[in-house]
Every structure is written in structure tokens, then in C-alpha cells.
Amino acid sequence: MDLFEDAAPSNAPALSVSEISGAVKRVIEGEFGRVRVRGEVGRVSRPSSGHLYFDLKDDNACIAAVCWRTQAARLAHRPEEGMEIIVSGRLTTFPGASKYQLLVESVEPAGLGALMAMLEQRRKALAAEGLFDAARKRALPSLPRVIGVVTSPSGAVIRDILHRLRDRFPVHVVIWPVAVQGAACAPEVAAAIAGFNALGPGGPVPRPDLIIVARGGGSVEDLWGFNDEAVVRAVAAGTIPLISAVGHETDTTLIDHAADLRAPTPTAAAELAVPVRSELVARLAEIRARQVRAMQTRVALPGQRLRDLARAMGRPQALTEGARQRFDLTAARLEPALRGFTRSRRDRLNALPLPPALLRQGATAARRRLEEGARLEPALRRRAQIARSERDSAAAKLRPAIARRLREMARDLDAGRRRLDAGLSRARMAGLRRNAECRAQLDGLGKRLAAAEARQTRLRRERLDRLDRLRQTLGYRETLKRGFAVVHGPEGLVASAVAGAALARLEIEFHDGRLGARPEGARAKPAARPPGGQGTLF
Image (cartoon, rainbow, N blue to C red; front, side, top):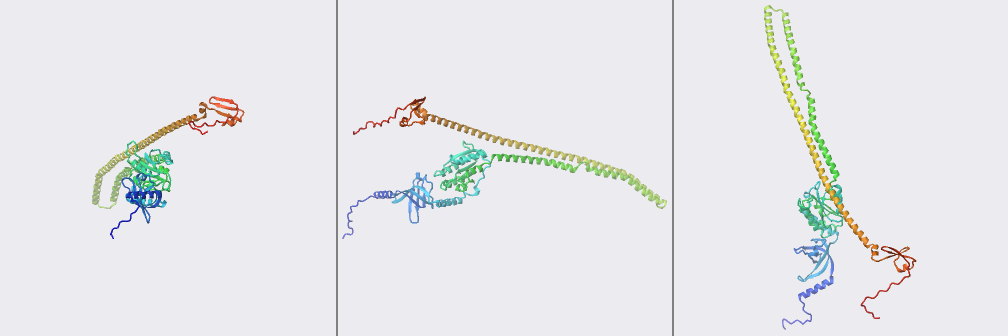
């Protein structure tokens, strides 16, 4: 017996690999066609070709999914690893790898819970990078001159923002139109934010001092574009302060965490962006009044202190009058006191029973003391004169010092008045300049408003003229001019021959007038002739 026996011959034809692969492909595509598959996103690959490859799996199986570049750009939700989704597409095979795969046409989250779970995961990842830190927040300008608005150019949102800005404080508004819903929303919003930040000063398009990103309310799916990572990174990378006004007060998106300030509504964003002009003017007037009062008080204080010092000092002569009076009294009492002292000593001496020699000795001593007193009297008078001259000299020295101090205080008062006048002049000039700027802005806005109103009036007049010409063209009188007529009866228009035959009198209206007529009887409408060239069997 041979080790290798020939196999029994078979009538089945031998198929090539390509043939069997094509047959399997046709069977799978014909059997399943379009399907919807629910599962968890596994490995995700985005090569440079733009195509999207990912795995869709559950606890027991895994299927490869492919989304071509053109279709991937239109996906409302990009698959991310760990996200539970529902994929719609066609089941097919890839002969080059002997596997079947799902050609993705659309992707939707598997319920709101899956969408919110993915949103929370993305929020935590971006927060871990510090994109939502409070230290990154920028203060809003108190009075922006140019405001950039990123929103849809049509709709109530932009009208509400412009109306609110016009009511509060008219400023220059630059609108960057974007899609606020769908697959194009996120890339267009991110590009608009980056575009505003890329504008330089002095260019044809003014660089805004503040950016408002606005959209009306909607579902989580409608607002999903503002949860995109590219939008959040564009906000964090910008240098211009940004207000987010996406949805209503209860709607929260990731752009709200990255923005410098979140507004509950687009109208509230306009209110946060600019102050009320009338309130600002009133506040400036109040500040100016307070400044004037403060400068007046500062100037008045030196004068009040000068008056207080003058009242406290009194007359300069009063400083020396007391000493002068005491000196005069002392000088007036000195000579009588000396005489009285000498007289009392003489009387006591005469009353003493002393020997003549002792009396002579005492008299001699007394005479010497009198002579010494007489000699001292000029010295005392000289001392009194010196004291008087010193008093007069002190008074003379004190008088210029007081006068000099008074002059210094007067100069300080004049300098304060000059500073007050200069401050008032600067405040007045600043107010005039600010008023001129506001007036120029108001004039410019008035001119633009008048031009817009004239343009709208002209456009509406032209449209009205076109409609009037259309009305005239389509009117029945123009039809009458082309040879037609309208038949009237006693009760109105006559629309058929049968209705006209029942009337006694008719009136026919032409384009240039009306004629009376009597019906002679209804005639049947001739039958339609058969089309030419068609034969007949009869």
C-alpha cells in the first residue's frame, strides 16, 4: 500500500483567494446592508490621511470600524476611547486582511449618560492641565472701544447683543460669523477666537479689546461644539479677555470654564461688557465735584490755619507791652524807694543816743552810701536804658519774623489757589476732551445709523417699486391689453358659457372700456383634435 494515495477526484471547481474573498464580501454586504451597532470605543487611530479607524467592542466581541476622511469631517461626535456610541453604517470585508469591518456613516452617543460621562472625563483632563485655573483669568476692560462677537450672523442672539450695546454704550462691534451647531461649529469657533487674537493694532480690521462668544439655548447635542477641546485651547491661548454666553443660565459648557467670565445669556454678556453711558457720565460728574471740593478744602485749610494763628498771636506789640509796663513801674518806684530808705535810716540814726564821734562816723558812712547810691543811679538808668533798647530790639526783630511768616503763609495761600485753578482747569479740559470724544463717537454712530437707515429705506423703496411693477405686470388689466376680456353679470364675474346663457344681459370689459351684450345661447366646447401624425384604426 502506498503511503500517499491519490485523493478522490472532485467536481467542485478550485477558487482563487480573490474569488472566495469577493464572494464572501458580496454575501456579507448583501445579507446585512445598512446596520446600527452599539458598543464601546476601543483603540482609536487618526493617520495623516484623515481617515478614522477605531474598534467597537463589548464584553464578548470586537469589530473594526472605518470612517473615510470626507465622512469623518461631517461627524457630529468624534469617537473617543472609552466612549459608548451607536454607529450607523454598512458591513463589509477587507480582503487584504481577511477580516470584516464596519464602514461608518454616522456616530451618536449611546444616550445622554454616555455623553455626560465623556464630557466629565474631558473636563477633568483639561482641568488637570491648568486650563481652567483662576490665575489664568484676565480682568475685563472697563470701557472697551472695540468688541468682537463670535456667533451666527443671523438669528436673535446677534440682534439682542447689538440692541443692548446700543442702549447702554454704543461701541464698535466686529462680528465673526460662525456655525453654532453641527460638525462645523467647533473648528469655526476655534478659528474665530484665534483669528481675533491674531489681529494687530492699526490694521484694516480693528483688534477687539473684548471678545464675546454667544449662542442661544439648546440641547446638550446642540451645544456640543462648545465642549470641544480645540475651542477650550483656543480660549486659553488667547490674550484678549473673553466672555462666554452659550445657552441659558442652566446650560454649562467647557468654554464657560476656560473663559475669563461667564454670562448667563447673550444679553447679559452685553451688559457685562459695557457700562451704562448715562451712569458713567453721572459718576464722572460726581468724581469731578468731589475733586473740586477736595481742592477747595485743601486750599482753604492754610488760610484757616493762618487766621487761627493770627487770632492766637494777637498783636505783636502785646508780647513786649507787659514787660515794658513792669519795667516802667519798677523804674518809677526805684527813686522814691531810695529816698524813703535814706530818710528812714536818717531818722533812726537821729533817734539813737550815740556819742558825737559815732554819729559822725555813722553820718560819714551814710553819706558814703548816699554818694555810692548817687553814683549807682546813672548805672541803673543805663541798665534800664539798655533793657529798654533790648526790648525795642527784640520787638524790632520779632516784627520782621512775624511779617515774613505772614508773607510765607500768604504765598502758600496763593500757591494753593493757583494749584486749585490749575486742577480745575485740567479737570475742565479733561471733561471737555472726554465730552468731545463722546460727541465724536455719537456723531460717528449717528452718521452710520443715518447711512444705514437711508440704505434700508432705498432698498425697501426699490423692493416696493419692483413689487408694484410685478403687480402691474400680473394684474388682469395688463392681460386685457393683450386682447382678452372679462365678462360681468349682475352679480359679478361670469366664469362659464352655461352661467352666461342663463342671464338676460352681460357686460364685457375690455382694456379701454365696457360693452353691453345679450347671450344667444350656450355652445358646447369643440372636442380636442388628436395630435398630428397619429394614425387611427377606424
